[in-house]
Amino acid sequence: MVASEHPIPLLQRFRYVVEFLALWALFSLFGVLSLDKASALGGFLGAKIGPHLSITRRALINLKIAFPDWSDSEVMAIVRGMWDHLGRVFAEYPHLGEFDFHSCDGRMQLIGAEYLDELRDDQIAGIFIAGHIGNWELGSLAATQHDLPLVNIYRAANNPYVEKLIQRARDPIGVRYHPKSLRGARALLKAVNRGDHVGIMVDQKYNEGISVPFFGTNAMTTTAPADIAIRYKIPLVPVRVERLSGANFRMTVFPPLDIPDTGNFAADTRAIMTEVNSLLESWIREKPEQWLWLHRRWPDKT
Figure 1 (cartoon, rainbow, N blue to C red):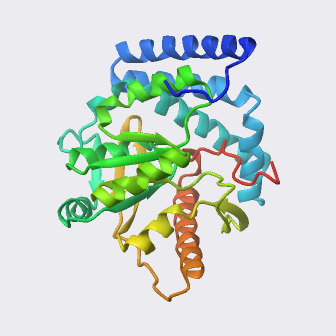
Figure 2 (cartoon, one colour):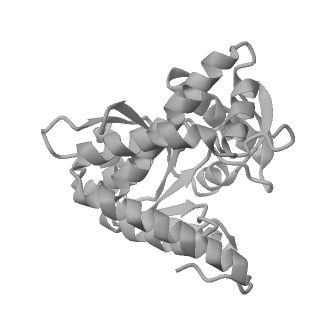
Figure 3 (cartoon, rainbow, N blue to C red):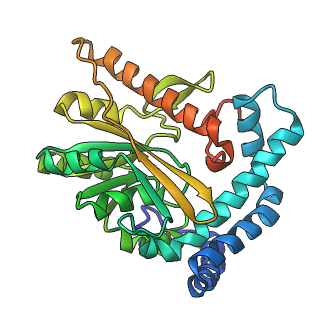
């Protein structure tokens, strides 16, 4: 369990326990079902319940920022699709150990496996960058199934009991996870110095980042991937996971990005993260219902 810096107030602890028990019950239910049935049920529940939750308001605002010309009905259709998708992602957690990128069953398509092999064999560290698109957990699974040591930096759940539940579900992935923090940053640098690979989700708001365009509106964006790639001269590799249908996916590993070396560190960092945001945006525009629109990506507008 993630240790809290401050004692949790009694009422908040009670709410956390109730949330944990509800999610544990759902995890247990999804776990006894087959992967396909669990995913379908999760999608059904997500689409029925999610649009009525208060946090949906944030998704509606974000979609209006990203797609100002869309009608209310178009926005709501994506919101319902997003909740269907998130319900599926949640229901697939108890089944993460069943996904196999080496299987010929057709469930997992992998494009760009040669880049995983190159990263594994080049004797230096590398950085995978991705967003909360498709079932984002599968990107890490592909790396470990190709014998790539991986350390992931992520945002921990606010509820420490739920956090523990999610981490247990991630056990089959075989990745070391470090919450976003000073300690996590140190773990990331140690991994790079060891020659391990790191994974960073780059689609969330970072107060300590830089303001970079995203869907035509500036958004605070982490500079960590660009900073490390420039300083250590290691590859920066975009990874995309798409849901094709049900619990069937396609993962694309892209060639490493070109890392500018103009001598102006700040300008090079901005150029890289501008390209990264543009790439993420292009993926999201293709399948907007598969992105997590619940982030406060533009906090001054939400």
